[in-house]
Length: 172
Image (tube, rainbow, N blue to C red; front, side, top):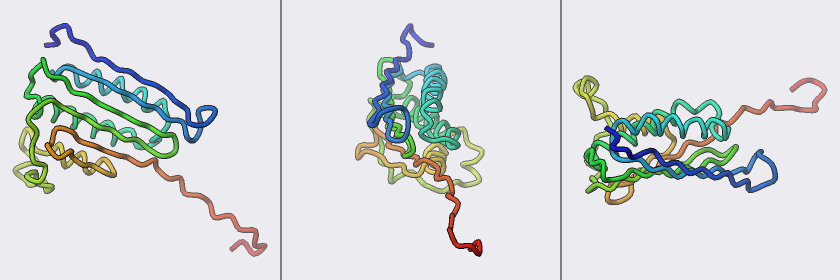
């Protein structure tokens, strides 16, 4: 149930250099009520903007998975589905460098050290318990603010292998 509250997204493209090439910075702030129904529309809107920024070409599905899991955790576990509490997403994309995401909730927090990194057979069949593990698999860096109400995730831009060009006449 959405209670008439909508997804609020503010995006700002601030190029650090002229044009939209390397060095362009995209900053996004978004807020949703703590309702399951608000997660998917936000993820879709953010991913459209992120994909258009070209900061993580080829890594979009990993970022989408991590964002979905972080939002699910914030809405369900953090804010305990209290629609009066908001979830905030902060995204920074830098073309050629990668993306940084922060998801914050207004809940009581948790101790991230109590969450196991391993996925057990029992855990694979459970309705929950794999979100943090999936975020860590999908992203290059995942860390939690001390109280456990904020998760920071980073995904570096995929490096395109550069052909090793040599001027040696023998082709080495």
